[in-house]
Amino acid sequence: MKLDLELVGRGALFHDLGKARSHDIEHGKIGAELGVRLGLPQPILAIMEKHIRGGLTAEEATELGLPVKDYTLRTLEERIVITADRLVDIITDTNQIVSSEEEAEARFEEILANNIRYGKNARTLERYLGYHREVQALIRGASNDRKPSRIP
Image 1: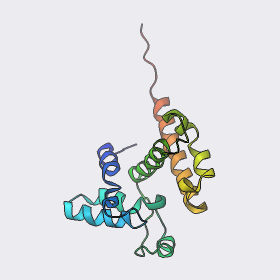
Image 2 (image 1 turned 120 degrees about the vertical axis):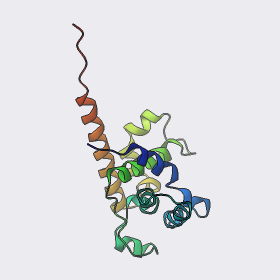
Image 3 (image 1 turned 90 degrees about the vertical axis):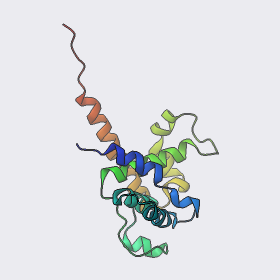
Image 4 (image 1 turned 180 degrees about the vertical axis):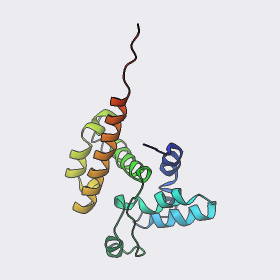
């Protein structure tokens, strides 16, 4: 599978740029606008704009007062960034709900399902869980592809 690791890294770095101006739901839109001014490429702008709640439908965007459009996460890179974003939020939570990165990963789905701060609502939770499962399956597949070398 082709994966643009540079896009993942740059998307992760810039996805919350809009929080320099607002921590509200529109921070993705604001961040993408700032990104345009900085000359960032479209794939990074897409990550910045669409990462809100794991990629909203046009209907959800309307309900939240965002410009009406489809914010669905279409690329694997976009889905990796949002999954990592949720994981980092859990790890760095000031309430210290986990004691290690390993615990955050192991309890990721449980924490999202039982904490509205992370899961948000049923539709968003379903997306987050789907992305997490997709990423985990890819990681497992990559590790299974690495066969130990045999030393004669």
